[in-house]
Every structure is written in structure tokens, then in C-alpha cells.
Image (tube, rainbow, N blue to C red):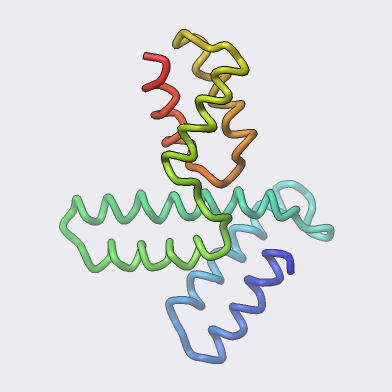
Length: 150
């Protein structure tokens, strides 16, 4: 089942169950998807699952950043709410690679591209992102590539 249809189905289920947190989170996701569909002019045809995964990854990252800011501000209750929403979003995302698995991919890409200097960092990061897709966070990829090239 496509991700968008799964979100719709889960939203209906959450509304019937009276789960306000889940309902609010899923409505926000539907809204984010709709905004991108309108912006791309694909309201009628919809977006591909890859596009939707990109949107969900961005939404998940927003929730993590908000939670971090709430923690810094001393509002643990709001931070927990943001993290709870992030957990809901992550159910629709592909499983993330472990750091060890990601290091293997980085090493493989660096060997294939013969990258040795920091000037090639962007090339390596791009190749790793293309290979792993949404299964890894860009910031983690960048950190690992930087460590390897230094």
C-alpha cells in the first residue's frame, strides 16, 4: 500500500479511536504532503513514495530540532510531545542504517571514487546519499565522510 494511503487509513483509525496526538500528527503530515503536491502541480496525480519519504524525513528532522530547542529552553513536556510526533512519523520511513553499516557504504564509495581530499567531500556525500536514499540522515553521512577524509 502506498504511504499516502496508509497515512489516510491510519488517520481514520486514529480519529475513530479518539487518539488526539496521532490524529494531529497525521493531519500535519497530510497537510505537508498536500502543500508539496500543490507546489509541484501534481495535486491530481499525487507524489511518488520517494517524494513522500523525503517530506516525511524533513518533518521528522523538524520534530527533532524542535525537541532539542525545547530541552534547551527547559520545557521537557513540549520536547516529549515533539519526540512522540517524531516516532509516529518514523513508522512511515524506511529503517535507518546503523553507523557501522553507513561506514561500510562510505568506505566503499570512497574506494570507488578514489576520494582523498576534503575538496571531494561533496562528491562522496552525494554518492553515499544516492546509494542509501532515506535510510540515513545527511548530517551523519557528512560527519562520517569528513572524519574519513581528515
